[in-house]
Length: 140
Image 1 (cartoon, rainbow, N blue to C red):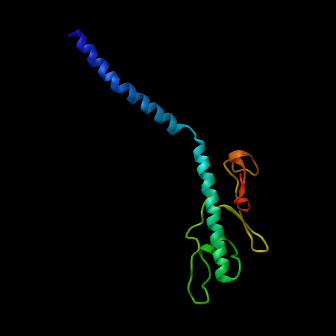
Image 2 (image 1 turned 90 degrees about the vertical axis):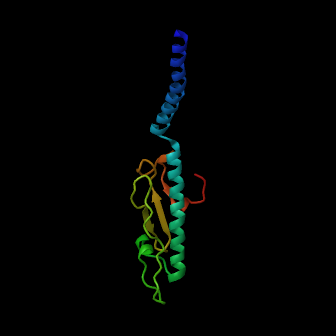
Image 3 (image 1 turned 60 degrees about the vertical axis):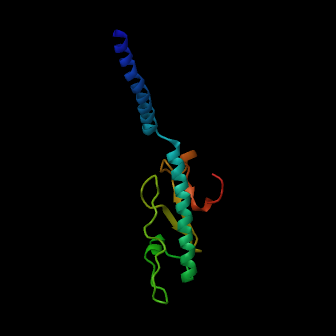
């Protein structure tokens, strides 16, 4: 009888040991900073830049001029046929800060969008490097 009692205890250990191991691995993976988050933010920035630049080009095609700012893509003036198209519903925000990307409209109507990367400081390397819409399509 004493042998069966100890076997019962080992049976519980057989369940709790893998469960404890599974939970501890999950906690480590969940709480550790992952480079995947920065990688996904980088892809999001590039996708946002392409999306905004596409909306910019559509505005230019429809109005024959460049928008004055990104805000004009969200609230454009009425068109000659009295219809109003919204090119952007909301301004895409920088995934590292949650605020609008830095934007500059050049005198020739060219738009440059910028994210300062993970560190939110001008310059940097790796994940901290600045990302510019002028670099879209070039290897990082």
